[in-house]
Length: 95
Image (cartoon, rainbow, N blue to C red; front, side, top):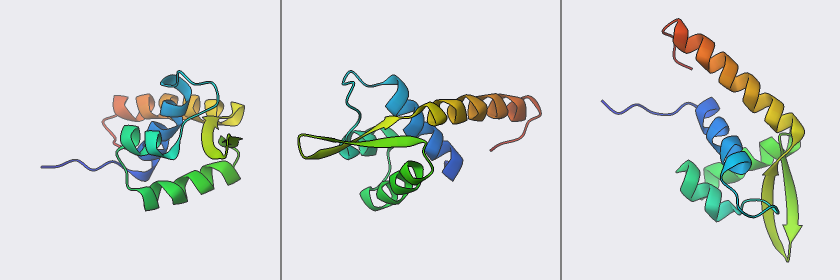
């Protein structure tokens, strides 16, 4: 049986990718996030728009290209997400 990721898991993947896996301090491109988060362009566009409007990601214009990097609020959210996920796993719950 295939296990699908929840919306929260996808958000966690996007935030952790912008936090951990970047060699470029300017941020991650949409294409990079699509590959790393394994999600379609249309879906990631909606999610990125939401994450930027909520202050979890920062959108940066670098040489005419939009890049995304995690904000301090995003780091705090991601830490709380990991804490809650661990807590839920300890009780056998899936998020």
